[in-house]
Length: 351
Image 1 (cartoon, helix red, strand yellow):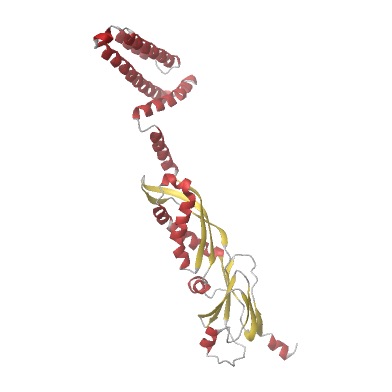
Image 2 (spheres, one colour):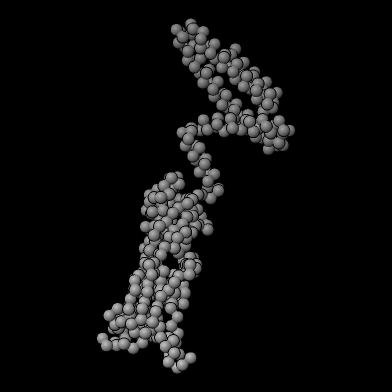
């Protein structure tokens, strides 16, 4: 190989970058011991941008297209190097290519519950996760703030920073959306939009554009979810404590009967059975008192006293209660003594 052939290899006449699909955001064209030939060809493909940097200062920025590098196409570099219009010598410059395509399916999620303010519950600790997509929108700013003089800067290296920015703005997103926690699951699109709007300025400050945000799931920690379920249950019964106790008792009876049928359950089982029996006894007593009160009111009216129907109705209610008590005794929930005492009490009210 001759001397002239060797010298020619020190000059670059084509600058281009073919992305290799490894998530590279910024790539520096190898320039060591090379100079760019005046009039060289620069090819910037769709979804790319190129930046010329002279002695640490960002000079000219190129979007997609093919360019012939002259003093006309490199006005900033020409000014920085003090070239005149007749300059035609090779020159040194750092050239960086940036990928501007969307980086999709980036994951964000809460590693620990995040405390937010909620107009229904005051403060709620929630978990959430989803996806987001972004792109390099301002390569000059991205080079200055993030990638710098690195030979290559990848999506993976930026992931932790961006994920933290997403989580940082969750509380702001909930506040801006005005959506109560109970409605977040049904308004995931609105919440995701609010999160995008809250986080986008932080991305922009790095030369990035946050293109989209999705919310896939939002939930409470398990202990808070149990409390929420109880609150929802109370709301469904209209916050009527009497009805709630009846519902709880009705739910407990089959489980208690099953436990008794399987041979007891120790002291705890006896205590639960007694508690359920007392709760049911209170419920039955309330029903009986309501029936007796109706009978007493009817007896106070002479015209009503002449009619035997209210007394007959009270007796029917007592008999119905006795049947229910008999069922509880048969299932082992009430002892013989408890049944006998309640039976005597009810029959006494009929005398």
